[in-house]
Length: 373
Image (cartoon, rainbow, N blue to C red; front, side, top):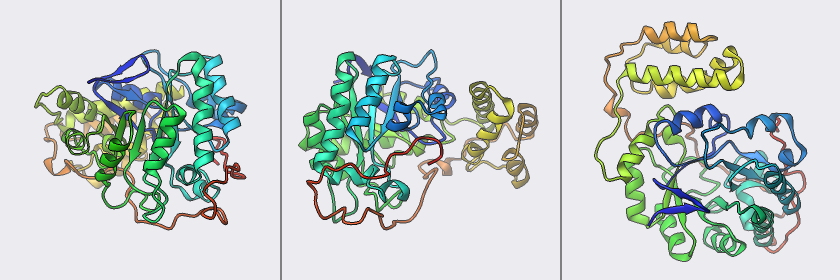
């Protein structure tokens, strides 16, 4: 049965997870050129959207080929969430809204935001319902992404999934780690299976999908309806081609030579330059991707360092030309974690946060504005 998002079929059932500083218009287009699915923009804060923060206005741009246009919102106040969604409806800014309840960053959870919110049953439900109700006149589907809970002693995912379903969420995506785990250890796919058993709406699984075959295995082992891919595609946008092939039952997988990877790198830097309207800004932003693209390839330290300091496409072209374009894709890089990896950590919460699960007061100071806060 094909996964759907409102009137949009999601085939293959694959979603690009929002990643700050990564999933901008340029990266989404690059991934879309490789395969199909839902490609979600960087996380947008509801207060910034409601107040038209200049930086946010740039972040909510979509390319003409993006259909549906998927926007992820972060908010802690039902009223401000509703206001932000009404703006999306009134100005036709997006076709899908995803709500983020999975952020485990200290500056978010310490004020009661992100992964801390599902612990507060009433507040969590009120935020989801506010978004669903405000989006309803335009028929915009609202979905939810969350973690298992704050830590192993405070797991909320099944109850939160049921609350989100009752509030009208069209699907629930679970990053199968707690906030305390951050990006450490392994994802608990059994939790995805338990959530799938509990809910009637579709459940999507997230966590440790490094290869297309991992996605098939997750669906086979958990029964989930689709997958959310984040760090696995860093420096590997062709993972979406692999996913399309895998879900279609085809065995081929993309194993690009270093020359083919260089061409994708050049394309990425070019798209970033176009989006920024500045070659220098685009190439500067591209620098963070260099190590991911070259992971496992026989590339000397000097070239890697120079690429990570490039300021122009001409400079980048010169360095890409020095690579051994015939070098095969390194099989040892397959199945390896990419992007952020860190250790478990204490989750900082507001004073007394765990005392009352029924408290629906809006956390003070938890709203951010996308301007660096």
